[in-house]
Image 1 (cartoon, one colour):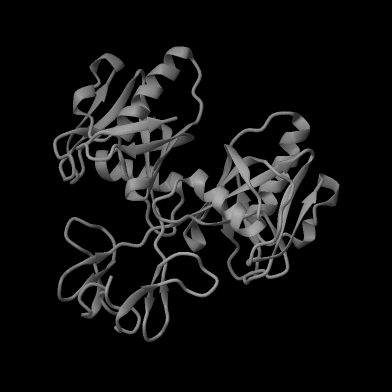
Image 2 (cartoon, each protein chain N blue to C red):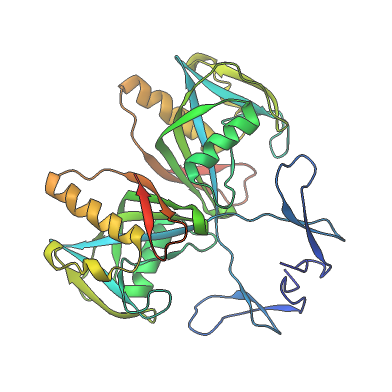
Length: 188
Length: 188
């Protein structure tokens, strides 16, 4: 971040008055550019005893499986965003139900909000960001080919709760282990 | 948004390839500026049968009462953000407990995530953004002087759940009523 998007002047990092951390501030018009974590919204689409997963057609983790999820857009609700992502990535219409997992990913400033959802029609089709979409029972889940730890953990909790007959909200943190490639600690 | 913060060139709105909505895009380096809703995190600090509220020293709604809450910062968890805001606005140390309300405010692209919390020490003091802080039992809550509908609704749900002896997560939307100043519909 080098130039002010309002006036085009140079930006410097400084601590504004009454603040306690470094911000990007315009040296000319003094506009402050706050940075905030981004919500990622998605769902676990249920059809009978199966879940709908998508195989990623884009980086990162191209070719691996995930739940439909993506960045929330301006002026939508988390539930509307979760349903929109499911439509865009899997051509699937869902009814969003309760919030199921909320995971912090502080190392990349993301919050995942994943909902249970009822698929309304089993006719689904991969969107431009998916290579294929498919339904999985627990024993068929491609555990070694799940794209992200937050998705693997959510699936794992889901099938455990399902066996126990009660779904409850789970919250936790995904913490990157320093110096290790793609290794994470999960705190529930 | 007029200038690219990376290269200083002009920004135009256009729909990028494989996208379906207008984005701010640099006319020179093609950087895309995505806009995302912002999480606001806070808590209901409990001390015996009372809740801690803050009276706002800043706009908007200066002079009115609210729960400690604010914009989440980069690289923190929602729970850490809720505890930080409570410390900054009320000088109060809390242990964050379960997520209690999640409200969408799509007209301003905000998501409120408010937690129940246990106050660890009743010695509290207003921070720079608060005129005063105080403890309230239900009958003393200044219902007509609560700063925001999302806070009033959360407090109302809290005392109703408390009476019924069971707190559960509530999710909903705060929708601005068009043409009316400060009038909102609440969908739970």
